[in-house]
Length: 457
Image (cartoon, rainbow, N blue to C red; front, side):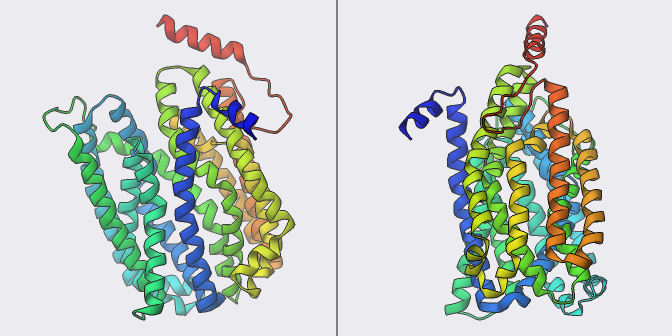
């Protein structure tokens, strides 16, 4: 163990990996609170209530991603470029322009959901969802603002604050509200979620403006992006982010449409969430990696870029593998914590775990492609994967239920990651995947040539 730690410390990107581990710990705290909340809900309210809640949250998540117009990713790139130039006033001006636009759009979407909740519920042939969607529409604006603040903090390299806002804050608040609801006051689940999103938005805004207050107000902005320029950057990412989210939730939506017993949605969702634990390292490292990729790529330092991407992929795989073995060997024992009914999702958990390990072995494919200006290509890749996923969902779910949805998800993940790895290889000259004991043949000559060309310029 000591020898492995010494080897890790000798890596040129040890500081980057250390920051990633700190971010990973913070993220684990937030996700731990989220899983505790799901345990309380599943055991206290049952699979039926959990299924209704899951379907409502999924619908609102899809609508909120549409309302933010791609700025949940675009702002990371825009703010990252301004931050690297120390153009702090440009960051503030850009944020305010985007805030006004997304607030207006999200308000319109929230109003539509509020007025059409019955129609949306009937689309899934589940009229009981209507009052829940009616309540949830209020939270949509808060969800969009939280996405925007998270992306802004990430672009400014405030990774710990980004993780707190994006994951930890809302989950801790929800867990606190669930406990208080049990002992102090009694209200419905949806109201607790709406309160959680509202409080998270207020705390996030406070933290962001504390960061803005640190900037020297005497420095005038050298460059200020127009709203049109920012939309031009973010709209291709809007397709990517929308399809990316849909890839994660389409199975729940199609299951909700086809199955009569909505408890099956809860069982699938919990199984999928547990397998998602394998990608905690990937998500944690992505938030730290994105600004680094922008920095190295803008400087044409491809050797450092290769080093940091390959090191991060190796760490992601090594951290995900033990969890994969647990999901493969003890699926029923793991799901039993949520209740006996949830053990029916054992096969779903095993199938999803295979797909998540494959994603871990490929590394931060989507983040790298978005940050090196290949967001349009990535949009096409993820859109194709989404089409494959939804076709398989429609074909498999009516016959195989949750297991069919899991297979569809894994096939989509494999296609998306494989295509992304190939594009990165052709663009940068090196592979991003990591498989133990397998040596990759990177095009070192191409990397050296790129570095020499950049120095000559």
